[in-house]
Amino acid sequence: MIEPHAPAPPGCPPPWSDPGGPAGQARLPVRPGTGRFLVLAGVFVCAACGLVYELELVALASYLMGDSVTQASVVLSVMVFAMGIGSLAAKRLRPLAAAGFGAVEAGLALVGGCSAMALYAVFAWTGDWGGMWANGPRCLLVAFSLATGLLIGAEVPLLMELIQRIRRQDAGGAVADLSAADYVGALVGGLAFPFLLLPFLGQLTGALLTGAVNAVVGGALVLGLFRRDLTRRARWLLLLGNALVLAILASAAVLVDDFERAARRAVYGEDVRVALQTEVQEVVLTGGTHGRPLDLFLGGRLRVSGRDELRYHEALVHPAMSGPHTRVLILGGGDGLAVREVLRHPGVDRVDVVELDAEVIRLARTDPALSALNRHAFGDPRVRVTTEDAFGWMRGATPATYDVVVSDLPDPGITASTKLYSQEFYGLARRVLAPGGRLVVHAGPVAAGPRVYWTVEATVRAAGFRTAPYGTRGRHTAFDAGSDRTPAGRSRALRDWGFVLAARTDPRLRLDPDGPRPSVLTEASLAAGERSARRTRIAGLPASTLVHPRY
Image (cartoon, rainbow, N blue to C red; front, top):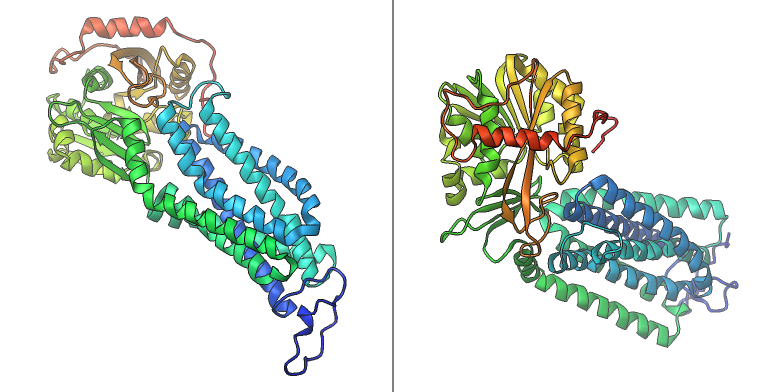
């Protein structure tokens, strides 16, 4: 420990800035205690920024590629590995700790701040993220994770050196101080990302602002506190470097709205009418005017195509309505199109819709094109809407209430939907069904994803149901049949939907002879869809559960 100095005489420089101090001691413009506090404050801010970069990469990768568990595992594992390499590499910079830390923070601000915009640009203008790991977009994700991890890892050894130059202390105490500031900063960054940056600024602007804060704090710490440890040339280089980074980030922030519009047109086509980020997902509506078919995208995935939505919704609803159908429960279906098909059947007294995203319901009620497509289904007095997570709602639902349960939920391969395709969830569905009731499940594509489809079917059977698998095909579309993720105009595939009809006894796959005549679906096409699905059967697949998801 360095002994405190006596007060300096008036007009004399303070002893803590005396170049003749102990060997290795930093020449600071402030007292050592103040300098130490400023370094720990810098650690706090830089740690918060670093965690925001990590979460930004995970969130963007999960949104663009789906399967959030895989994307989080890849990003975080690569970054942690790179942090170790960065820590080792930074040992060589310890003699130039101040200059090295300034350069690391400027690079981290540039890489982390621009990562979201760069990844989104590559996705929008080059195509799908699916396929082999060697393709461009996935390699870019790994490259950003690697670069960010290297720079974050280099921070700690350099900060350790700087704080020891201010006031020598045992290594354990210095590590404890740095770790405390680092972990508290990570907590603040981890909370700021979902509750402040993402909802109020969005992914792109939030990353750019974080980079700017990182550059300002890192530059101010080095150029303000440790400037006497730098040569004149090093000071100018760091100043110009940080100014350049801030200029790039500021320019990107000014252009971010135009960039988003251009990228959105590249992904969704030229006729985007509605684009909004809800608390749940991104919602985009295209077409629906001047004779152009309406398309609805939820979370970047094509959920409704006006070209062939009738094929999907008739196949989903009508086979389940062959039997008692006084009370119907629809899980998902916030677009109102499944409700439209249910209301076509006479004898329906009540339809309960459980949809997580209130904004989708609002659009289904108020958007002229979407409300016309669903025939203003939510204006029917028999329809009651609840905006809640379907799993939680089902746990509190009254047993033996519904004659029909329609599960119109996102594909099971999406991690966020996995619990809604679990044995436990179908057990809840079985509990709310009245005797003789039927459950129908949208189970993903049959031909493009037979393992996922037959896992759903096995899971439904494990919950105590007998099943009748079937499928249908739509028209050719510019979006991939398996993931619905390929940007517009890049490929054309035949859309493929699989369903599972279930009941306590063997369900009969047929249309209601006393019900309305579907516009597209026929008994013959329904039988053909059943034969086609059964040809893809994969036997012996285990059921998916909450603790052991199989999708």
